[in-house]
Length: 275
Image (cartoon, rainbow, N blue to C red; front, side):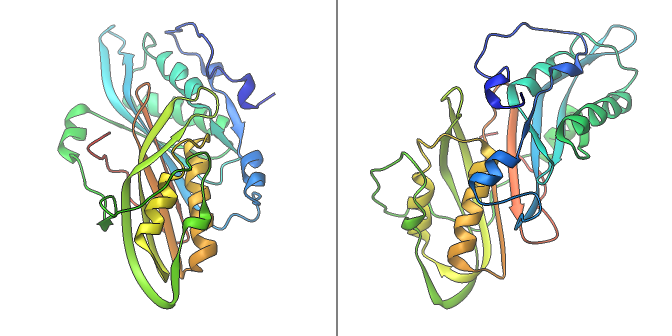
């Protein structure tokens, strides 16, 4: 029963303002992995999904409310993703719930989210001052958005648009802010920026831009869009290393930022101007 059709996504929902972990709804990753020819044992990447909550609030024992920003790091190989609306409803259920301090809340969040994802989820709570001091960052490498491309088909990703020169091996970091896809349930737009870092056959930047734009009417979750980009580039470039990650614009107080890489480390969770 853990398919997206049985989730609260796209349905009217009551606002529950007291702690309700049963609101969390897991969706197995295995189905989407299978669509991409993957399984839990054959993932060609490691990584993490960073979720940032900008509407985190709870009550102190005195009844005084606290507001903060929450960061949740869900392993890319966890058995489940957490359906986004259920995640929002769960976080809203903290609004009138009492916790002695942020450390107690972190313990509760880690327990509930790890149980839902099926693997340990790391939680960090930052004050607004801390987040302000961290500031905004720009994406690394070269922006390809000003390149001249022509494209007319936006219904599905088109890996055949990608082109490279296999005779040249290069080390590159490229990024674009023109990634857009649609929620597969509500059809609402998801806006994002994407980074590609690799060492391998020289990728033609304009072909990458055309390929990314072809996602514009594609219906899929954030995580699967990034995984599809990763796999298509890996097949083409046969890279020594490859990292693909996207920073999505928030909806309902949450943004989702999937990172997929062949390297041992993942980039830090740093906020962009649109976030």
